[in-house]
Length: 229
Image 1 (tube, rainbow, N blue to C red):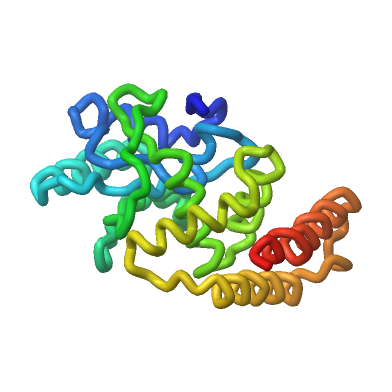
Image 2 (image 1 turned 120 degrees about the vertical axis):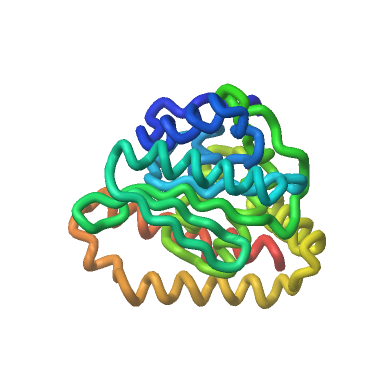
């Protein structure tokens, strides 16, 4: 599949990527997460970017990237930069609330080299890496957006449920992480149970939204996890 430039990219994301490219820093990280997936199919908007540092980046280059992003975002409002572990997050605030973040992390495993994106001089994760990392998020975090992203990937026939699990296994092996499929399956079901408890179907007022939520939940419980059987 050839990636395409998202039709509705967040304005803050666009100016950040253009600023990095203008300073020759666009290829020092690669786009991942939901924004990365938007280059293959757009079904939901996101207000954040979660790229990865390139493996050969120097400390000086990292600082130049952070400084460029801070300067660019300050034109839109207050900016706060936080760092923890191997992650640095440059966050734009509005009326005391975070409205955009550019959160860059050091990856622990990469399946394929990053590819050129439709943005000038900016790299994009391979589709396999985008799916593998989304699977890691599904198993470890299990946020509603993780379920929706994996469901849409399979619904659009961009990957099968089995392929998603295979990519998760490959990434876990490269990262020297747990590859226990039984544990991962239980984790997905546990996350789903938490979501169902927090938002029962009968609490969804809109008929179409309720039907869609039911369809997604049943697919995960009856098809997605059982492909491992």
